[in-house]
Amino acid sequence: MIKSPSGSMDMIPEEVFCRNTIENKIKDFWEKNGFVRVSTPIIEHWDKLQVALGENLVDKTIRFIDRFGEVSVLSPDLTVSIARMVSTRKKNGPFPLKYFYLGDVFRVTSEQSEIRQCGVEIIGADKQSIADVELAVLIFMTLRELGLNNIYLEIGNFEILRDLLKLEILDDYRQPIIDALLKKDWVSLNDIANKVSDPKISEFIKNLPKLTGTPEEVFSNIDLIPDFLIPGMKNLENISKEIKNAGVKHYINLALVNEISYYTGFIFQVFVTGSPRSIGGGGRYDDLYSLFDFKCPSSGFGINVDKIYEILKASYFKAINTDVILCFNDGIPLHWVWNMAASYRDQGIKVEIDLKSRDFEEAIEFSKKKKAQRMVYILKLESSGISGWIVDTHNENKERMTFC
Amino acid sequence: MLKIAVPKGVLFEPSLKLLQNCGYSVPSDFGRKLLIEDSKQELSLIIVRPFDMPLYVEEGVVDIAFVGKDVIEETSMACFELMDLGHGLCRLSVAVPKYSSYRSVDEFHPFIKIGSKYQNLAEKYFMQKGMQVRIFPLGGSVEISPIVGLSEAIIDLVSTGNTLKANNLVEIETILLSTSRLVANDANYRLKRKEINSFITKINGGI
Image (cartoon, each protein chain N blue to C red):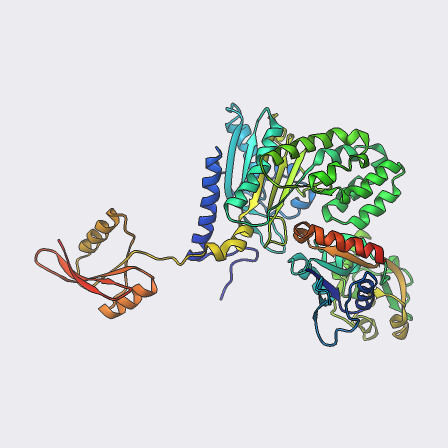
């Protein structure tokens, strides 16, 4: 027995059907929201991606030398590919572009290397903070549309941390603070904060993990925030109010960071019961497009379809079946078989032609195994056409048939 | 109900004692049971081997766990590291046989043989020093490896130093100080935030 390569998986028809059902629901819902689908290649240039992704993700990429001697990579992230595409082919808009994608990304992790991902992008909106609200509401509604329960949407503003880390007194602690936030290591964060000389800044860094919770809880603690970070906080509060007005329950997390380094402002993540890790998230990345010499604000999110599939597979699982199995005796001219199958298909009936020699009883057994509703057995060639039996596989009632 | 994992071994007793100090009515002795609920049914406790802890926490089978910093670092465990509980202080050290000529890591010859349960931390440590060594990953009884000639030095957890002494080994360098940490699963910390936060408040009061 040979398994699929490490980190990848095969899918049998029932599994593909189940995942397609989930994906189709997502596609339909996003199209209803005015997003259109784009597609990018699975290989990408390495040079731009390397800059955009950040150290943690760079280590997880699968790279190789292509036939031109350049470094290429199996796409670890579709947002950067879409940025490249838009900067090349849709520079003239019309903006904003509202795109969605559905494809595989490749990141080497302990769990899997090939990840099914879908997501949306809003590119070039003037009212970018409204785009941020739309995205946060959309990710929540998408998960609800799929029937997921207990959705925990968490929002933050990376601008606040970025402005904090610009402080000269944090020069020596910048990377350790980011590492502690990425690892969610509050013990180390506290140790670093103890070394910071300015008491207000030190206290704020210590309190970062506590600045998490409902909007009411966090925004009532505004006295913990240093003055120069208040504008970023106010931006977040405004977005939070709009998300609330849209009827979406959410939480605030000021310590929220992402291992992808292109985020510049608003940032969010979602969790649902049934998955031990986040199943999706996104935010704003206003500087990403300038990598491709195109200044354009943008934001988006991605959802891990494999994780959703894992949670929902039991409820979306359905046995694959066909309507009719068409069996025929040896010696029946093939064009009669094709014609008969075509006449069913013209009526919208799914027909599978059996390619194994079986007698009548064996053909009934085979049709039952295939969960077909009917079995048609072409028995012999008549002067005017063909004749045989139509069998209802549930009760085995049979009826004579002729076809000319 | 919160699901909590307590590690077997040295951190077992202090972890249970802490829970009791915080007002949870958990028995001190589980007997042979590996799963137990407190009498008020607020907590469900499971006993897990320390190096299995990352799996239980990362997969969300438990919400909260007590785990040594050494395990977190060795396995790059993905979780919230919420609190340093202070107990179970020990150190990850490099030790060599008493009769060995080495008295510092910098004297090590290239490709020196090291026995350790902490393969990743050992590799990282020597890489940062720019040294090439051979690391033999061992499951336990690491102290025997230099005695029988499998290795020339070991990297292992030391608390009192008695085991090293009994096996004629001496510590020459400390790599990491480790204490017990309170950790939480990434998603459960959010989805059960109220329960987990009130648990943390109680633990804070009990330290």
